[in-house]
Image (cartoon, rainbow over all chains, first blue to last red; front, top):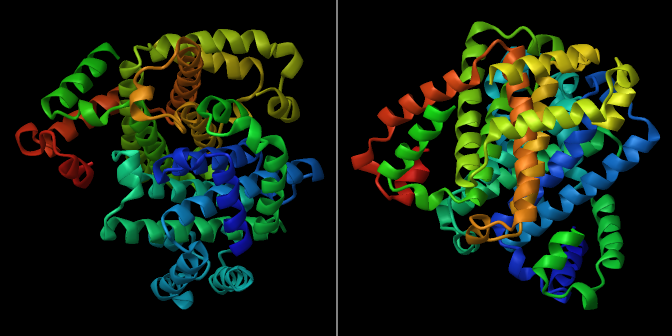
Length: 113
Length: 113
Length: 113
Length: 113
């Protein structure tokens, strides 16, 4: 993650693209990449999405790479550590959704999450 | 990242929520979280987005955590390493957008990216 | 549609909110509203999405209203007639996907669309 | 709007694509189209977004058409009138954000909306 962050900084600086990388713009780019990822899943069933063919899976892998690129770049511009932020969120969720109370319940899942 | 992935697996298993975590559903959840992040940026200027007040920045940090949670969870369900995928994408982009050719150009940036 | 467009203009002018309604901002707001709509569908099956309970359906109706509000507002700021644009798109698609060639094929559907 | 809705029904039926048009899938398609629209705005300023060149504006018009297509299609599958839903939402917002209280305030705008 650290080396990825550094590479992305150097990539933007070498091209003088820092000027386009405001958090406002980067969150738009992040959203666009998520949609490119979503496009592969829009017409297939949930079961099919658990069993992608090799060609689709490779495209999906590249789109996941793009999403991660913009997420890391956005977090860096804001001085935020995205993995630490995620770790904290997991701890919050563990307290908020006690396993014994919400287990297996779609209804509870919808209400809580 | 590895410990985050493990924690998210245990979180879902303990609650029997694996059944809801098809890649199709997870990409929808990822998209929803990105929108919750975007909401903080929709009415402000690019300059303002570079200088968030402390309260907004904290909310943004939590939303970035949520986005990372679903990105890691989705990638795990597909057996994809998201950081490796991002690293590869950076290498591809370095070759595709040579610094000397695209430096500082918004137009080039739009065409290429 | 015409009266909706007019009402939205008056709404923004009366509040001096035109200044926030740049197309860039409005497309972000549109995206956020679509995600609020999507949230109701993220953990349910396709079958369930065809049979929403009354309470969810009412929330979905309101979110569809929000999406339409921002779509009409964005189109108006750009001087675009969204219904005419959609009509044209249908004509293009009718030529592009001849019924006899693509009928019932998920594969074709994915490739073409 | 009525004729657009009818055309979209016939388009789907003639191709036996009703089977793919669950509300869950359609909201994903709607989200993907909004992102294709957003892509044209991600690296430009708010001022630039108010003054698109002719070529970009034409592309934007087509994307707005696509967004409208899926919004009308989704609403139809759910038996919802999207324009009526939007009209109602405007009435709700007029009561919720009294002009004299929120005029010109970005802060109020953010808090309220």
